[in-house]
Image 1 (cartoon, helix red, strand yellow):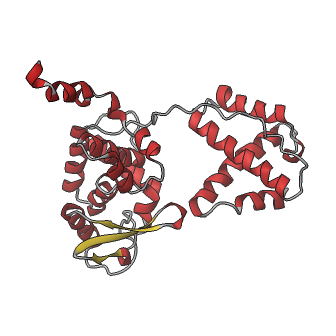
Image 2: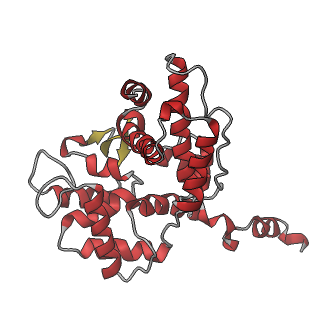
Length: 287
């Protein structure tokens, strides 16, 4: 069993491996609680696991789909390695995941309030955190993992070298406001992380979430649940609201598939952007 799990997780890299391990561990614990050996599971057991996630644990469809995908990959690896003759998860259907992202980004005014509050904060890491997430669209692990040595210049632009998903390294240009925020957070240091906690250690996602909660409360931004990904979501939706082409937004967000970018677009139902207005303006002479 240990070898089978290790073989499955070896297919993933970095943070994806950590998340896959968490999802696979959840399935293994579910089996153990019911006295079931995972390598002896049959298709009905996998179906029951899906129903448990949906009806008892009440996970979101995206979470159920992700965890089931990991379980399916685990059994396929077992078949490839000769541990099992066939996969019990072959004919288990993945649940439907709505095309719209369940996360709701900040409105334009809310984003301005967060930026203003962070800029006026006595802690320079606050403004740097908000600009990295909201103005550069970095993922939280990319922002907290950025080091001072990753700052540099390229073709006359201030840039930040970012290590993203799949260990892909990209150069992200820094607008002047972001560059000033990072310089303020770095101060006189020449090494170490850009973002630090109050104790001087590298900021992690939990510390970042607490800082964003505090900024939202101070700036009177009323949201049901403030978390770092909301700012990346806001980065995408604000660009689309500003009229930036979908392809350019996809490149800026570093999405492989444009459909991923479209899932972020909470403003597709915004009547201000309805194409009826564009058509009416184009045919204005006849109407």
